[in-house]
Length: 330
Image (tube, rainbow, N blue to C red; front, side, top):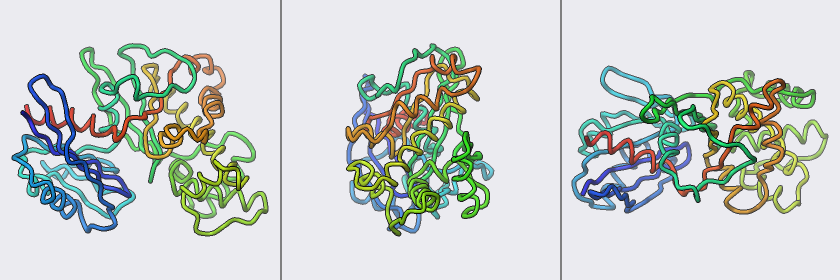
């Protein structure tokens, strides 16, 4: 029996689990726990709390992912998180967990690693298209920020390629989106994709639409508030914000698919869209997303053949982390 420490560290929550894998490579997740990052000064504090709580057996390997670019400091891997003050290092993970050579990877690298492991029932198709075997795969998703990664095939297996596509420039495709972009520029200066395609971005979008429509907005709404009011129809501005969010996500996903030529498929994770789809709320406007995804001029016919799936598996990054830990244990 192999035992792996897994950790998925986002801007808002730090999720941990103990994975157990038998000789037949059947994987079981034990002792899953989630901690608010704001409640802890560092990963070391949160991880020490988790390990103390479970009082678990000796570990064979550890794999932890976090939201931010993976950097190198000599032989030490490090992630200075983008939307959280934590500075995470492989040395610190080794010191707290007792695991030699732990794997530290970007959170969407872990999600990309999970894609080949996901069962079909954990995927929700958005539109048509059929994946081409062995071709590049794109992964993106909105939550506290916007994550991006990809998979490329080396002829034998898929290799994850990390990226920071959430920080590319936000594209505008019509006059009204240009006006929205101007308002965002007045607030933030440079406007990255995740300024709109994230939880905080959804709130900013609602507020900016209020300015442009000259309608009052309520200060202090959370992303969940905006989504809930869009879902029950009580706030037309919230509904419009969600609609623009879906359309813009389609444009960005289509751009990523073109950049990678992701005919192997596009997969949407993160906390927002899978939550909307999984709840059955109808908030995710699949027709709007797909229209914008395919709206690529002379290449629209090609994009129409690229399949898109929303990942509905609970805590899917753990699937990818388990694969990374398995490699580390060899």
